Structures are given as C-alpha cells and as structure tokens.
Image (cartoon, rainbow over all chains, first blue to last red; front, top):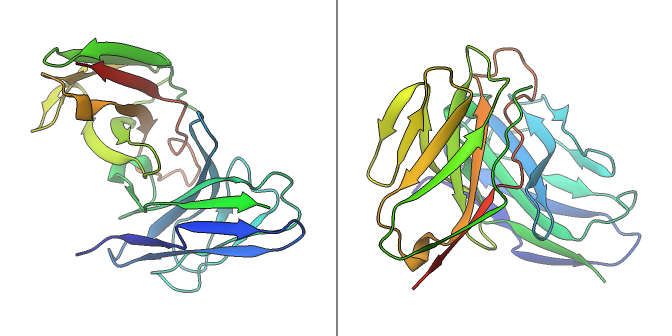
Length: 114
Length: 114
C-alpha cells in the first residue's frame, strides 16, 4: 500500500543536540511538507518542497533545516538553535504543490527534549 | 491570503447531524475548500473538497453558498468515533508558487456525547 512513513514515532533529545526526523513516501508525489503541532494548537508550516532539490521556508523555519535529494524523502533536522523543539511533527505529501491536490499525512513523530 | 475562521469547539450527541461552518471572506477565484479530520496523535485525514454549491461523499457533505465566503461541513448521524478536530483549508493549485492555502488554523474540536 502506498503511504507516508515517519520515523521514529517517539524521539528524545538532549538540549544542544541536533536530531533528524525521517519522512519517506511511496506515492510518487512531487510536493512534501513539514508541520509542527503543539498541544491544543493547529498545524504550523515549517518547510515545504514543491519538487526534488527545491525547498522553501514556511511560517516557522527558524531552528530547522531540510533536504530534498530524492523524490521519496524529505528529512527534517531540528537543530540546537530551535529553542522549544518539544512538539508533534507531521510530514505530508501531495501529488503537486498546493492544497487543491489534497494532503496525505504520516502518523507523526513526537519529539521531547529531556 | 484567504484566512479561515472556525468555531473553536462544538458539542453534539450520537445520531445527530452536525454542521461546522468555516468563514473565508477573502477567498480567491481559483481557491478550493478542503476539510480534514484529525484524531489525537495522528495526522489529519482528507474528508471532502469543493468549489461551489454542494458536494457529497460517503462520509460528509459540503455546502458552499454562491458568494463562497463561507462553507459548511455536514456530518450526518454522528457517532462517538466522530469526536475529532476538523480543519478547513482554502487554497488553489499552487500555481503562484507561494504557501497560500497551506495553513491549518486551530480547527474545530467536535465532541460527540452518548
């Protein structure tokens, strides 16, 4: 079955460390997105990629970095510069860029700073 | 940017019809309206999408008036499992290259009681 796989499901990070969240899709979608969700809040856009080797900052990109070297993969690195990284991170993809095409979401990674 | 406004929360009972309204006064000609459902610790799931008038699928109906400044998601005969957060998104095919339509607000927390 086609879908998006995020790993790990739970991740613990010590302060000052960088961590990378994995996102892989086998839907042959061109566009991919990373969102952050805090308790009781909506989803805020971190980064998005319309096509391979291209990505753009979203609303809250500071302290995060991404790469899109392969169509299937869009990893997110949470750097030590992110002051409050504890949150639920969601990766999504769509056939082409834009909400018209409908997003398919992964099951998320819950990151906790210890 | 077509911002959306939804009620923060709603209550209803099993077997009732539930209508959730989203306001989007600045909707553009090319924008579509898409609704998503999110359960705790999961990614949002696509429910329905429309441009104007009425759209119906096996899960819900979407009513859009002629001026398209609002839309109403209708869930028939809800059950306890419909308790979730519902998001309204407004956006186009992304031809402009920007991030319009990628923003999820806080959504509407729907609570279904026995």
